Length: 151
Image (cartoon, rainbow, N blue to C red; front, side, top):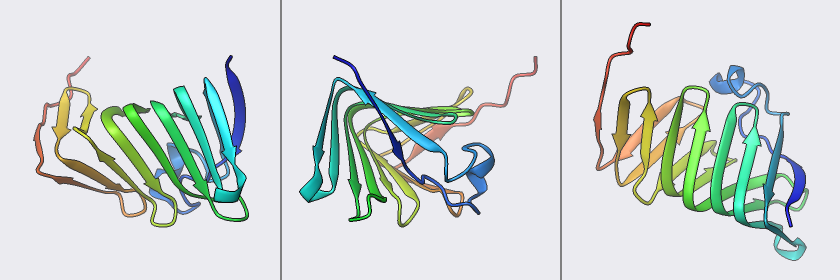
């Protein structure tokens, strides 16, 4: 059985440089999966089996999704685990785990993470993307840079 549930999630702040690509921090985040469990006492939502999270031009697919909120249901952390695939308007990534820290506005990819934009790729032990400051840090990184092909 497929379950659809909307959930408001502020992935970026209003003054974030990514706001044009992801529209605004008030954009609705939707997700669906095979099974959703709400753990109210723990302020946690678990989503298992064919989990897909969408917001504007951002899509994340994984086997297990977990959203951890505060007492007012504001998201603190979003965890995507097992077979993580993330696609944005200008690239895609694969990893075994992705963690979004809403307070710090940082996404951490781990478990053989790889980013691809066109024919350029970067991989490493851990890829940390600081959304607020538009910085990407790769631990034990290696990559290739390919010029954009003219059409």
